[in-house]
Length: 255
Image (cartoon, rainbow, N blue to C red):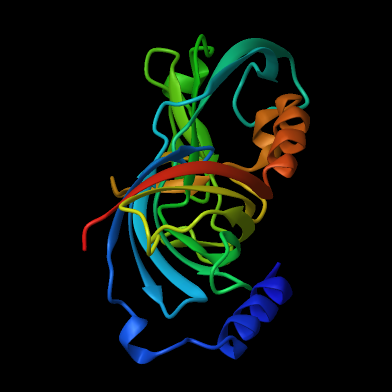
């Protein structure tokens, strides 16, 4: 992914920008929807071969699924002991800024390559486990001197995907193709279709933990703490290393 990103940026730099007067001489506002959530963008041309797009989007609570029969240890920290089945509901929980560059091989056509990145919080999906045994309310799961506890048998966690960044600030490179111009020189309203993928890295499970001093912070739960459920979670987390991104945008040229 990093090699593709570098090559695409190099291609962008070799394309002619056109007359300087054509750069940033228009601005469009766009509304989008897709697998990266609902988004708002601003776009401006850089000559006839490039468009710069910047925006923000979120997919909080969209597209959920409940795993009904995941087995976890009956007692936290005792993966080899008895287990119980609990339902875990997961829903998309991403929210991020995006900075993207559309590259048009033809100065007049709509087909384009897109390169850029999604940036912000590493939260990708929110997960809620219910019906946990009482030991999860009292003893909790120990993670590096922090305790992750359930409340009334309910534990809230999230799937974190940092991409090439860090837990505090995720950077997810994006490469894709599409059709349409965010800033159409001949039309006030335009439509853009994009299809690509974000590199997320391998997601991990995170939850809020409390330290011995009372400090609270998000900690990553080790897969082995989840017993038999870890295999299922690992399997689906592996599928999410590259997140398919399909979206449609409606743009209105402001000037």
